[in-house]
Length: 174
Image 1 (tube, rainbow, N blue to C red):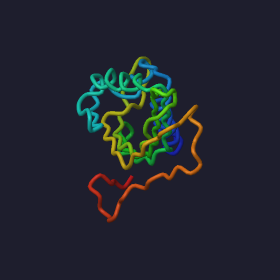
Image 2 (image 1 turned 120 degrees about the horizontal axis):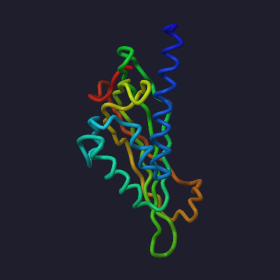
Image 3 (image 1 turned 180 degrees about the vertical axis):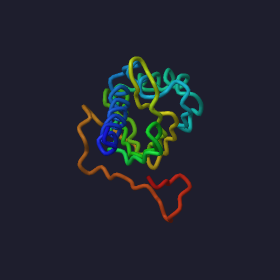
Image 4 (image 1 turned 45 degrees about the vertical axis):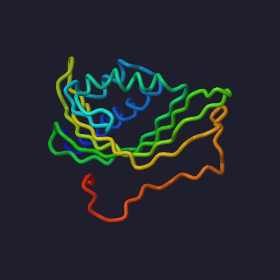
């Protein structure tokens, strides 16, 4: 196949996994979430560091602890190392809220980055891309108080991540 066409196909496949990751968390789709990672993938979310197959029940329990959840991930910047391996970085925003004693919803808004390694492996009758390693880097968080019906407060200020010098150890050129 023409290399440029295969590059587009592979980029699209990786983008699909990233969107599936967010969607399956929001919809509490355990099986779909399991198709985002290779079972032996190493993940580091700070509160958990280990294999993806052991992480999935934990993260899905966390998601089920929220009354509402919303994940939004940017399109990733991707660098292919070979026909079967790649690195990517994308930004993500997550809002989660729980029902409070007074009936309102309140929670947190988080902003961070997903630093992913990818492998294309044989699965079923073909090959597919999945995450083979992930580091989640939390850049900022802010309280979301008094969010009845999740109607956004137009005066809510989003904090910015403080990156005050070049050469952060987790920055990678992709």
